[in-house]
Length: 473
Image (tube, rainbow, N blue to C red; front, top):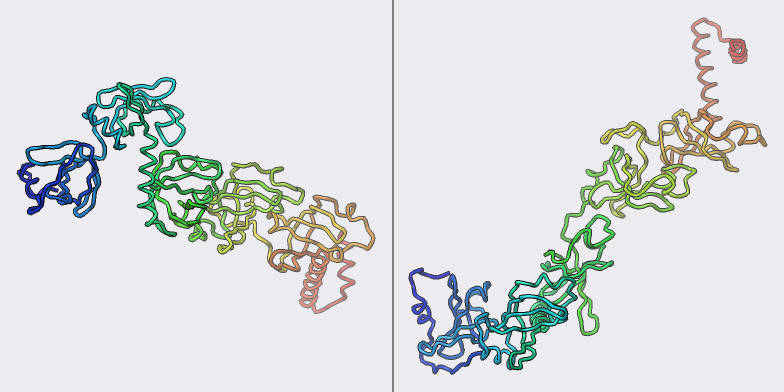
């Protein structure tokens, strides 16, 4: 900023003079390099390699700092004061002479796009009508050239004959990219954070311009959520802050892999809050496979509803569910290290936040169950009040309480309701017994009989008790 708003331009310029040196003669279009000596509200002064000083309009170098080395071109000479005005390119006030210098020395010139025709853009430059082919208007294919109409841009003069001026913006952009690339290469390192602009979107991700060098933002690195298409997260032109995750040499180039996900909080750090075990949760089906359905429980967190939790007669989750379907589920188990959640369906009538009743019965419990499947070694049943694998168990042939050789499908057809006892509740499996349930019932009757006889002072026999029970029937 200026030290005093009352100081004149001449005063400020005089303060920057370097005494004791011989001034060098400069010409319009000469390339100049100097060190920033003063930064004002509207002007930036630089010391050159001789007695003379020069200045930029602040808009040309908005980020200038004291001591910084800047390069520019002489665009105006003041013979009386030896003052030089510098710019990155010749401005809109340039004339035919400046245009010739711009062509000879490949100095950028400013031009305003006034219209488009079949082959390219019409550009007003240095009071002349110029032409820029569409292929030279940008670095990439332009779908709608009319969007450039009215914009003032910088160009390189490619041809200059009489009144014919052929321009290229693409070559200037590529030149700037090369210069920026050299400056950025020294800053690149794995783990560093960089800001860039999305330039194109492909099936496998998005390309981001980091300032003259591009990096790839793969689909998997866009979000902790499962993303199918990059355009669902970013759009061309978006400015994004990314983290460099890989730098790999690729011939003469450098392959840069970027990530948005790496800069976001990992949702699995709070998975116990998002998906508390045993509570009813709201979820949405995101994928269907032959082994089950993936259900989104929150940002970046999915659980698996195994096909066996859906039903024993279901061979593929798509037979019962569809992508996008809302479900109420219960988290049965969480492996945060492997990022896996095992789900089961909530019982009918449940509400989000309820303690799930669809929980695996404990060892020794007497339960009612429905026959779902026959096997040579027994029958599979679903315990009443449960759904899915957590409440599904096996009753081995020896525990059915049936005579050897009977027709199992006739004695215990599908959907038959039976009473059984849980005799094994090892993690991952459940075994039940009809025989044990009957024995427990008989033992309970006997124990009750003993208590009755003890109160009467007479025991009798267990056979007497059974005969009485039969007589009652």
